[in-house]
Image 1 (cartoon, rainbow, N blue to C red):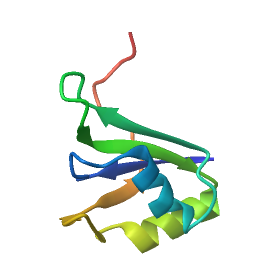
Image 2 (cartoon, helix red, strand yellow; image 1 turned 120 degrees about the vertical axis):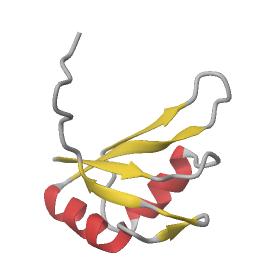
Image 3 (tube, helix red, strand yellow; image 1 turned 30 degrees about the vertical axis):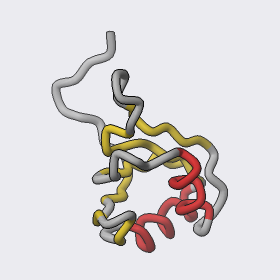
Length: 86
């Protein structure tokens, strides 16, 4: 199972939109968009979990692709340096 980072999403993006987009490359195991607490809109990024070969296909097919007028970024999730859990 691989976790993918999705960035540069428009604020109007819903989980259903992202699920439809990634389902073309395989089964979406989990999906989480980061939402603004006050407005309820997408903050512009989220995470998707897929099987390894499906995740690589999704990156190849979606990274840099136009989605609702924005060029989305898709790649494997990487840990941020200097961050620790609470």
